Length: 417
Ligand SMILES: Cc1cc2nc3c(=O)[nH]c(=O)nc-3n(C[C@H](O)[C@H](O)[C@H](O)COP(=O)(O)O)c2cc1C
Image (cartoon, rainbow, N blue to C red; front, side, top):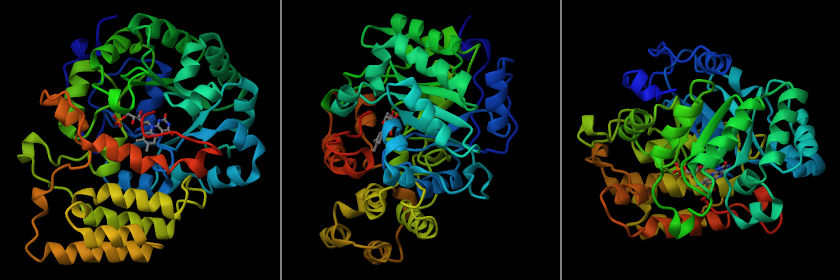
């Protein structure tokens, strides 16, 4: 089959989740399912699974600003089945899809045993209709646990996990994968087996497991296009990696023909990236809310729906990490606010940091000048620079401590899944 991007003229993606789909996607059950899940929207704009960062209040905030599909952070299947405290932390408290501020949410699990994963999935309330399998984490903890990107190299086991969940649970199953180190052809052969086993959607992070830390490098959209060419006529294919604005979204959709895009680091910095802001059409200007506004909105949501009460977050640490990402460009040049942020012990302390920043900005502050500051690794690469900038270092340091309580002892996952 030829690429969807060539058989169908690229249509400008719409950031309006209620707009009817303008595209005749292939008439298969998984495609029809996604269309109905997205309420007719042409494309999926997805908040990535992020340990301790795709928590419930963050999902609410991102949906307010045009994301139309969210993933929970990864849930460890064995711990979910055996550790009551862990389970309590990750168990949803209500049907997010039906909440006025809610929408579709995929619960992501990691694991390497089909019975354990089935048991974990079956513990979820029945309204959690979609479960995703993490085949992306490249870190040491995933290597030791035999899950994440390392599970991709155990093809028979992974296929067994998918078919067990598809046939024995009443959930829909999706998989988030990386490209295999042995190349795109091997990757497509494996992904085809996953589709044959009943996977309804694949998200392709267009990097191999070796591309992490200083070696992260560019996302391979050409590889994603080849996956769309091979499997896009059967199930929806989603692109992940390097998306930080609607300009990136359009370029990615045009080059690959995917049904949607997923963002992690970009959306962490600025949860309104799926709006027409900071794009060529606005002259690079910010037209959506300012950083501080979004930070305040997150804190408000976190007060109402604490991330650590069924929201898959660690509490204060999770909220603080969000604030540090939202406000990176404000905190960098402002030591007093940085110290206050560092010492914050509550959301009201963090509101006070927002007050400090707004006072410093003054009445004539022009939010239209706000650019993307924290997430510039990919932008540097686009401009032809090969050297990774300071942000990657910041990222690893910021996230280094944030996984301990969320993954169990000796966790060492960084932000490079
Ligand atoms: C803080 C953080 C936590 C992450 N946690 C997960 C996770 O739980 N499950 C997963 O599949 N990927 C996880 N990832 C990887 C992202 O989902 C995504 O695949 C990766 O960051 C590439 O997308 P990007 O270029 O938009 O950042 C995480 C990434 C970050 C930065």
